[in-house]
Length: 160
Image (tube, rainbow, N blue to C red; front, side, top):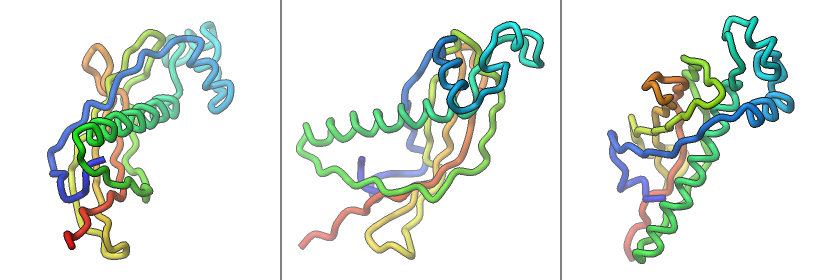
């Protein structure tokens, strides 16, 4: 992770993409969101979705996995160049979570995160806060998911 001081409003990260399979949709739904339109093709066909679709929570969790993997790759690249890696802190929350289009079997969602605001933390010296808009767009260029999140990122230490 880059230091908070090196991150600017407008910075965009192509976090990754994921193609949703029927088996994966059903497995996730069976554990965490057991509604019939996530579990059974026939029932889903009769629902307002018209076909088996992923849980919205599933689409959010995939973003999280891809974001963690993105940060690992970024950290490895920073270390390979001999640069210091900043600590990523906790997230105080998510807001404005919207599931705008269903994610059907075979859909590939491409996730992008954009920094929309930065501010220094008043309560945690040495930390800054990033506010980011994350979106997931399908292969038809339709936005399937969007949300705003905030996270703590370490500030660059003062030079001795």
